[in-house]
Amino acid sequence: MYQAIFSDVDGTLLNQNHQVTPLTQKALHQLMERNIPFVVVSARSPSGIFPILKDYQLKASIIAYNGALVMDQQRYILAEKGMVTTTALQVLKKLETFDVAWCVYSFDQWFVKSRHDERILREESIVKAQSLEATLEDLQTLSTVHKILCICHSSDIFTIEQHLQQAFPQCTIVRSSDILIEIVDLGINKAKAVQKLCQLWRIPLKNVVAFGDQYNDLDMLMEVGYGWAMGNAPVDIQKKVGRVTQDNNHDGIYHALKSLDKKEEHGM
Image (cartoon, rainbow, N blue to C red):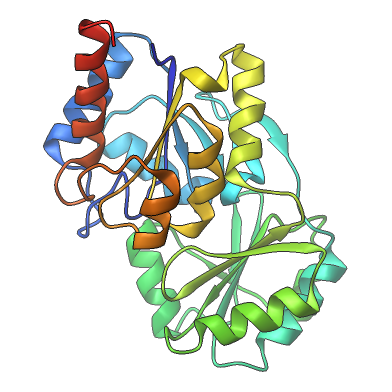
């Protein structure tokens, strides 16, 4: 019997139009009626997650910044861990040698170099949140940085990722799409944040379901008892996870939960 559901956002909970499909909405509201905890797990900031919960009337705890910030339904911070500001500034200086748009996140603040950059404008429209312009000098005053996001060209992403991994072994660096690279403190990942919440709730990981579609979801999907890769996930992720549901445009979460419920009904 599953006791909690964890879901990535982009490419998983949301379809290509950045919406929760009707059948997935139905499945999530049924979870709430059954008092089964639902947790949104994302690389997004809290401000990029809250509008989704409001729009679809969902009650959920959140894991933001790939695990660097954990909040309960009342938005109380349960756990957080960022990188030191000096390291973050070194990463930003490295990123400025490439053709990228960078984003810096500290708690629920989002800083960018230029809000006029079309890549930032697109990100703002997707997450329904507004960024603040800041220079590297401005960012020196931050007490901590929970995440740096690098928005780049798909043709450059592997090269940039490799350069960053070589230059900053003290950070966790992972792709979350074909144009996005996420940089957080070493050891931060979605799996550890899921472990933290499950420990607080005293729920065994073997009784947990998780959904995801990208490389920053893989550790979470492999950690829980029922990890599901979305049908739109890269083939190598699907192979590693084993369980594959429909894609995010065709109610993947709904169909996976429905199949689990059927197995429970038949005592499988």
